[in-house]
Length: 539
Image (cartoon, rainbow, N blue to C red; front, top):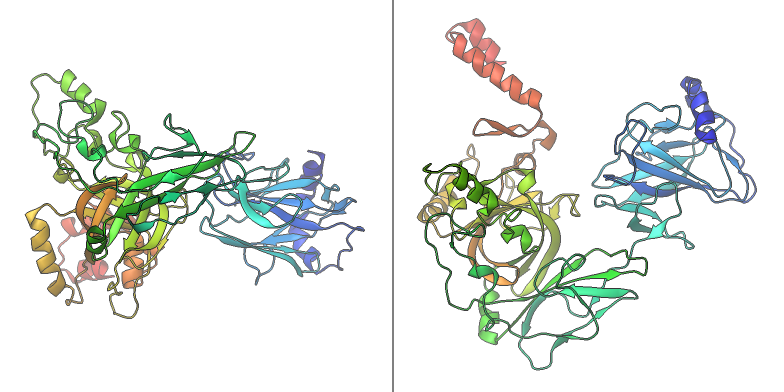
């Protein structure tokens, strides 16, 4: 606190701080070195600043044996530019001590320094400058998950992703388990097995539940047999209409098929250290099949969607079932009637918004080979079709799960509107059930419409979807409308896009929506045959 009070007292003189950049070179105390020690670009719970906000943060360390006067040193998120933030004169960092700076645009306070710039959750380049303006450290910070940091490993100085420890010694993240086989398709063979390795205790599940919380998690003690599970009873695809909160459809009496579906083995594993900290969960999907099935699935893209089954089928939070909220509505509205296809029904699968998004691991295979695996968010998609046994999904790449973009050409013929480049990066896409006649009509019409320059279309292809290791059927994999779709297809920056659907703002600032509404109201109340009114609208 004394350090920060002295620093804050000098902030009033910081108007002249820019002159410190050109001051004489600063002589480090013997053995002393100022370094960026840890960076958090997606803080949610690890640090609360003096404004009560969960600001991102940068931690510096004096690695030397003597105190350092760091007045005049600077920080920037652009190594090619001058420092954006300069430490006030008289700021001293003790030997071996740490200093946390809030990475926000708020003003520094009596007890806390703020950089004046924010950090990018998709990755950042930080630069640390000496008072003479020379860059003494450049740090390439990768995209980080929420409450994950990038910092110096204790004892080595090597940079690594880790769990956040603001103003405390860095703690390396628990290493993920290593799988002996990658996700993929394998010919059924006797004695094939999967082994896992880690210096810590490994917990794993085979039912797609989260091994860090699941009651079914087992401690790994030996090889896991790999075999064709298709002859085993259906589990998740056995949900049907049964008048309970776990009905996947409303009053239509849908009964699940008694046929045994093709299945994959889903292994989810996490390592647990001696202090009880878990690593990230690693999810792999294995298709062990005879050669005929392997040949069939090599001819069509295959997507494995893995999520804790509760995210789909739990009566309270499951997005694939009607849920307790529907039963409660029906109980409190005796005699009330709504068609089961009415999208205003109070059912889990009719519910929308971020509250009804669930985490999942999405893995894609083509020609039997692994394309990508990425943790993403899933939501139920559509209107009345949500009340069907084969529901559609929207899939979102978000930094809270991992990467904020999916960097893979999921649609190999998807070119930008001027046919100048293949689109290889997506922020979202959709998986749409194909069991509807209008889907066939739409595909028949879409291809010729692509030749019209002034009409936007969505590229798509067919795929087979497995959910939690069970075959779900054939789906359309297609582009999803978003601000990034507009950017990648039409070259308009995402931040300049405003999307309105059914009269509601989906993307963009409220101000843009207000401007459009005001323009609409103007058109309703003015005669556009008037040149003055017409010129205003045209402008």
